[in-house]
Image 1 (cartoon, protein in one colour):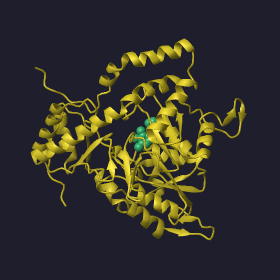
Image 2: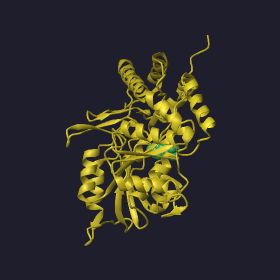
Image 3: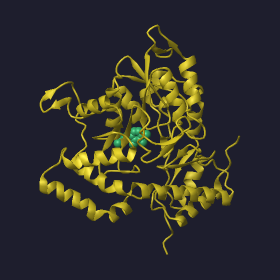
Image 4: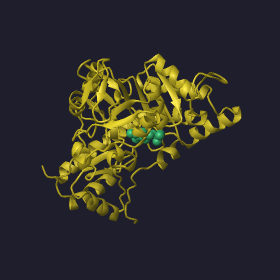
Length: 398
Ligand SMILES: *Cc1c(COP(=O)(O)O)cnc(C)c1O
């Protein structure tokens, strides 16, 4: 018998299962020669808006497009800064810069790895000054704070209530980076009800990169919003700034969702809930296995106000690289999301952040390890993962 190996992500199984349905999408597109726009795109947009509980969904070319368009459509541009976290994929800050603004960082919470609302409050109240005009100016950059981008990283919700409250107080736009959080939910203590990821800010960005919880068979993304102006501006931005063919209101982008990807996404959207349920079951099973082995690693923490969709299952351990190597030795693939926090990456060194200003993001980057996580992950594979870790992991102090 061949020893069991465990991939980090299994993208083959769902595509084998859906092969006929997906091929039918391609056949329909070819037979109608309908590749850009049209029914397939509007149909998916309507379904995905319904799934997010928002009035509008605008399909775009990628999650990065979605972020960039959402920022520009909110009226943020040069002279502005947008506050986000250093523990995210670089697309979050690329989009800020590409919109003409610049990013500023606040640290993350040690248990959710998402924006720490208390750090945000301290930043806004102690590191910014209010100008006569009512604008909040960052002492660090001398620029106006215009928006906040909380990231629902790993499919875990950022704590939105206090973030939205601060945003309201200082009249800042909130754009959710929901690129890893399709279907995640947040319980607002303020409104005493559950909200879908992407339905709480002025708008939200989703990525349908193939490895995401809902992935296209290529590049795709979407902006969702309840705001009619943001919807209209995003539609124009994705299509060369034209509201009517060859009549351009602004310079825009080539950033449309194409018909084949929209059709593929419509097929897969039917399975999102069941795939997310499988991820949640797998996460629960990891938790139980770690408990039964008594392995002293830090597990993902799910708050009572969060229903995570576990895009990634991330643990923390002191000798992360040793654990990773031991897993590799058993044929188990892992990932690190992300090995270098953004304030340490070359494009942002000029911002001059010191590690001591962002201690949690700096520390956890050396300890985090993403274990295999995908809907078809089997309990026996998880057992192998956890038993291997239990042999080598040493506890995180404190
Ligand atoms: C994937 C991702 C993006 C970018 O999406 P693309 O579709 O790859 O452009 C942005 N932010 C986060 C947090 C992501 O995980």
